[in-house]
Length: 407
Ligand SMILES: [Zn+2]
Image (tube, protein in one colour):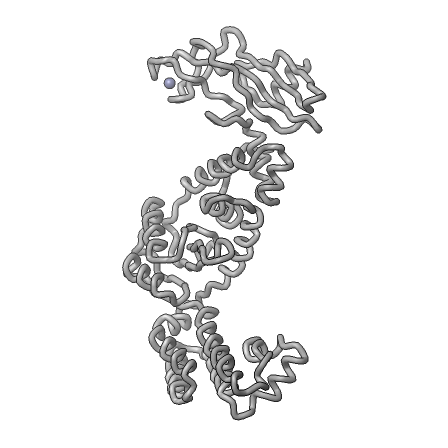
């Protein structure tokens, strides 16, 4: 095998092309590989895919970045031909075996870049490859979008929706995930009715149907509730346990915050009331033991919280309903305004809270996904747009099969 044949095979140029010059430029740390079409060779039409077309003429020289050759940045240089396509009837640019149309990178380079992007932040990838990240993002968009287009969602039946803050401040992205496959299906900007409207649109495009969505797990935000009822009329809503408990925790915390203005002893006791007893530090445990049986509103609210958490230990929806009725009576007669308010919120969302005893779905896996999203944010550091962040989330939590070449 000659040196040129080795390059030809390693670059996967395909038939019809030959390497005719390989030049090292040590000062630029570059290896340039010049290629040309073989005389009389036949090529595939890049527009309609018709094979065995004769060359019509050659275009301008183009450059494709390839994977490094040791420490050398490798580039392929060549003039893609136009072919006489009988089907298209006008000269068309030939398809290239080593690169996508219009891409300035070889397929191997792209596959390598995608591999790196799964493992490290984009600014690292950019530094390592010596390419500006604005030229790398479109590669990820392409492969992720291609893989998403190939998805069908006809099996999707149980979903969860949750928001995650996009950055410090109040920008959110909402995630819709499949509770059965544990994959992120949809990332949407914001947190409102539109999230579910957009998801419905994608669902229909991907052979799914809103009527087939049986279970939806989410928090109690009015915009999600309105969106669910409007766009998924058959769905059963389960309010996520964690978010339900948060209503109670907030009430305990608010009660303490108000009461500590008059009871100095409560200062610094915040986490003693909120954390699980087994997770308390010795100091927190000590203040809880000292305070919990005193005649304090906070202590009373704390006992209401402990009692409420026993709800999840009920076995049937009927038992849970009667448990909740008792608790509601107790809470609304507690004379603790924040607790009364919380109890009314619970009452207003009772059906979705009790639904858990049938559906048993939670956004718990969303928490795991949230961890991935946080790492996606780190990986997409300087992600510049929601599109970049969504692409990164799909890449690491979407369970996609990307069609990159194998390297
Ligand atoms: Zn053609």
